[in-house]
Amino acid sequence: MNYYVLFCQSLKIDKLYQVFNSKEGIEAFIPKMERYIRSKDMIVLINMFPGYLFIKTKMNQIEFDTFLLLMNEQRDGIIRELKKDEVSALTQEEIYLLDNLLDDEYLLRMSKGYKVNGKTVVIEGPLKKLEKHIVSVDKKSHEAVLNIQFLNKKLKAGIEMQNSKV
Image 1 (cartoon, helix red, strand yellow):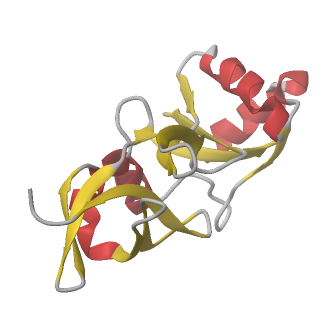
Image 2 (cartoon, rainbow, N blue to C red):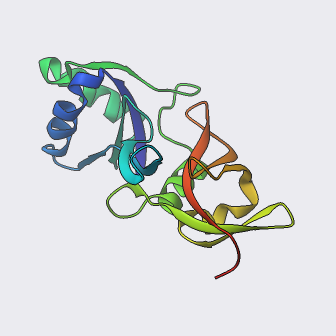
């Protein structure tokens, strides 16, 4: 499977999501994450990458570019296709990272952990496999920052810190 990333107008991303998912052999998704809102003391869902639409398909780069061109007015709202060295498909490492972080609903769930000698230990959740990449944790906002760049941003994920090992 190849993954492509489209940068879209925020107001039109839901319409584009539906258009792409109505096409044969294409699965569009918008990665979301659980985020703790301290003022409301609750967890809400937010877009991990606002304005970005992810596409999964077996099409190669040329086929996908041609497909986009042939969409005509249906592609209204797409600003640009993200490309690296003329290839917009995510690298195998990026696909592996997404597959490990996101569940079947393309949702990054909150992890749970605690600190031991200044080191974060993850006991549950998607960050368990990426524990060594956690560089900081904000207990108040329930957010971990990882030393992994994704779409030119440091990756952040929700984590609920406990006082000690459970």
